[in-house]
View 1 (tube, rainbow, N blue to C red):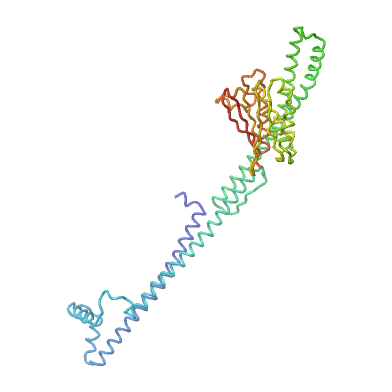
View 2 (tube, rainbow, N blue to C red; view 1 turned 30 degrees about the vertical axis):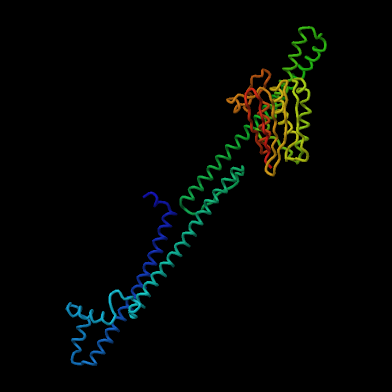
Length: 407
């Protein structure tokens, strides 16, 4: 059987067999000793009976010995049993009334029971010790796996004995090396992507800034009634969107590559929201959207203030763009476990099949001016703060964004 090739299983089986053989020998020795006692007591009882009768009837000594050790005469035996029964000695009589038999038999029973209990205790202790060793090895691998999940690739499992655990340890160390190398390559690729994105962004910023300046100069020189003015105004809007898009992509790529060191501090969440709402006043007024904030004092979360504000701005801005002539209600819920910020609008809502797509990069809604990166950036920022975003929406009635920060 292939299972017997396993050294640990063979060792366990050998141990069980050896222990049981040892205790079987002990039972045999103890049983043999107790049987010798029964034989000795039997002979002593017969000797007393023979001696008593021989002393009384010396001429019948031979017949007395034969009658005690020969049972060929069934008639005499039945007669003897009848006499014994008349004196109260019968088959169902409790063995304890036969003193010469009771003690040896009791000795055998108690000896076997004692040996059985000792055997049971020894096997339990051996099994416990053996399985404790196995559990310790398994626990070592479990803890090492957790270390790898925590991106600590310096952990090593050493097994100096042959067997399946040594094979498992060797395979685990090989897997660790593969994961380490792959993660190192992924990190390099992400760093390269961040650098590339940053370089492209910086290369685009200069000509884009120049174009924006040129566009503003031309806009100031053209009358509002001129058709060129409307064209330049639209151009200014698109250039602004392009500038925002470049900045957002750069931020998102840095978060993905974990190239940003967040400045975690205890910050008042209400103050962050108020600053974000203030930054969006112009957009809100342009879309005729009223932003209502149910201010709650003295609620703080451990976060990077500027980045969390960025996330809120993107979510609220999304609500403003989809709630023209409507309103947005913002409230805070706080308990010992989490802090939840509810951002609800009464805009056009989201179709059920699109809810799972809204955080996908460059996913565009039915708004023509939608870039499709704001919500993706907000999600990345919140998740980097060990939080998450829930969305509930009914098409035609509005949406509710729940931003949750775990304490």
